Image (cartoon, rainbow, N blue to C red; front, side):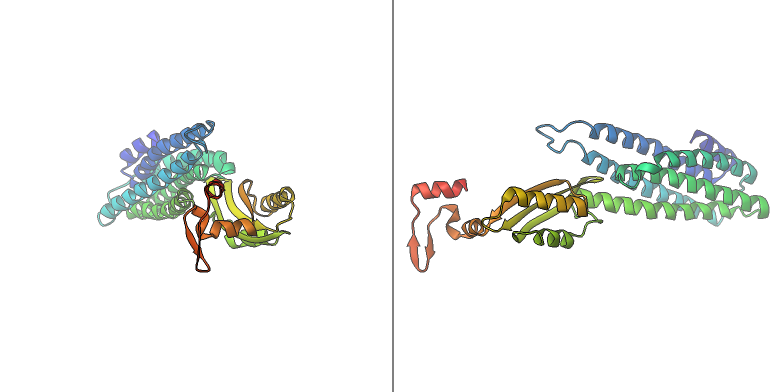
Length: 296
């Protein structure tokens, strides 16, 4: 970052200055990523029953916003320079950009393994890849300046890399917001989950089905299952759990088993213990019945 900042100032290159500015946000973003990973490892407690897993998603969201903001700044600076491009020292620009590319490729390789299963890691990886692409465009700009004297290439390449970064950042923001809003994970078909449960032996109905993401790679599910009156609940519960794990990779489950009889009681207008009418006849529950219903 320091080398590119000094080099961008000495060579008058926006591409290098933009890449240095991008790396400055990376210092903060990668620090935030590391802090979120460390903090998320803290155990759950009475006030945070899910622990601190969501901090990783918040870090991914902040990283995405930072990527967009720095890219917009680069586009603005490139617009200012395009019509009156300043002289840029192409050879020095190219040499510094090559060094930056080597460093960024090493960092991208180190972060590559965890990016598929962790939004926070993907945010960090996108920052580094964005820097690597910035170095590539700076090299291209330097080559065009050396070969043809096209100083405007510096600004054009800066805009190009900014749009590439914004595209990746938008996906990161969209996915992290979906997690924060407890939306259904993109890789899980809610209808398919419901059908899989319904096709389990002894299951008669399914309702209140919810699937959401706690943090990257950790999906949760809650559902009410209405089953046959004499169905063995332990066996049914085990079958549903195994099916959801094998087909959808969901392990964090909350399943409420119900019978049709209990469903009818829950739906009855007298369930609250108040007076009600049934076939035009008023039914008054005695105190003991009301206590039982309230406890139910």
